[in-house]
Length: 153
Image 1 (tube, rainbow, N blue to C red):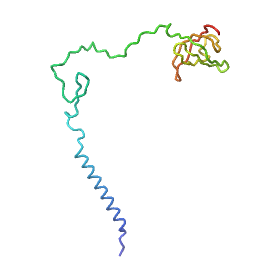
Image 2: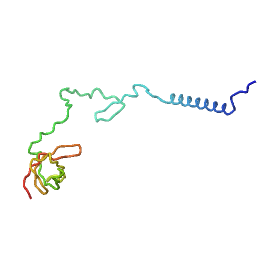
Image 3: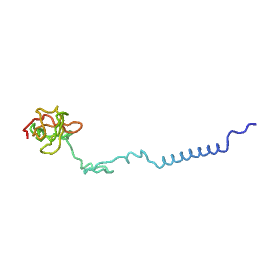
Image 4: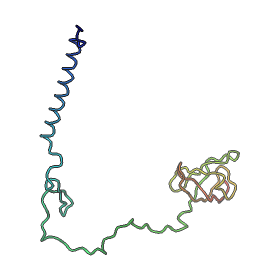
C-alpha cells in the first residue's frame, strides 16, 4: 500500500494559509460594517452661507437676493495698455564679448542684469556704453532686443 504524500509540514502550512484567508475575510467584513462609505445623500450636502463659510444648514430663503445674469463678469481683468515709450529701457553695458556675441546690460531703474545677444543689436556696442533697449521673455529669463547706442563713455 502507498504511503500518503502529505507530510505533517505540508498540512500545517495549508492550515496556516486557510486561517490567514479566513482572518482576512473577517477583517474585510468588519471594515464594511463600520464604514459608512457613500452614506446618506443628506449627509453629503454642504451649503455656503453669505460670508462664504461652509455649513450643513440650508440658507434662509427669505434672505435670497435677485442677481442679474448680465451683471456677472467672468473674465480676466484687463490690464492698462502699456505705452510704447514705457517699454524702452535705458542701461549701461557691463560686459560684452564681441567674439562670442553676447553680453549683459545693467538696467538703470531696476539694477538687474539683462542678457543681450548680438542678434538683438541695432548699433555696435562695447563695455560701459549707455544704451536703450526693449526686453523680451525667453525660456532662460529676460533678454534685451532692439539695443541702440546712446553715447560712449
